[in-house]
Length: 102
Image (cartoon, rainbow, N blue to C red; front, side):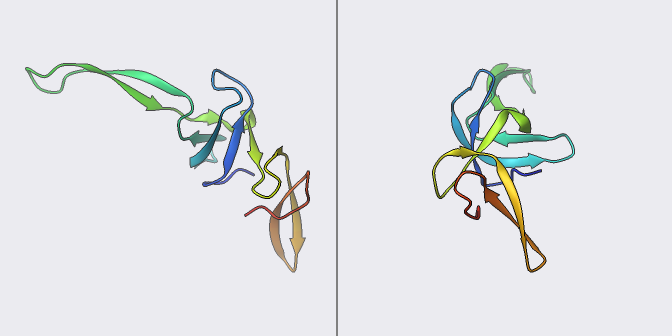
């Protein structure tokens, strides 16, 4: 996967389209990522003990990685990601400005 934890991404589709956020968790097996403040859903929670009330809790859900685009830290544009190999080390690069992505 080309997106990593800590990257800033732009949401390309869905109800949160054109919003940006920071990746907080990556699930490579499922090709999904968690972005803070994005894809918030309401979950109904049953009361655990007698006398306690049930409630609705807002929970963030993972989104599919193909519906996001990385925002380059150097040129501040949403971009595709490429790779460059230098001395047997692989680096991610921005396809727009050509700079290495942190």
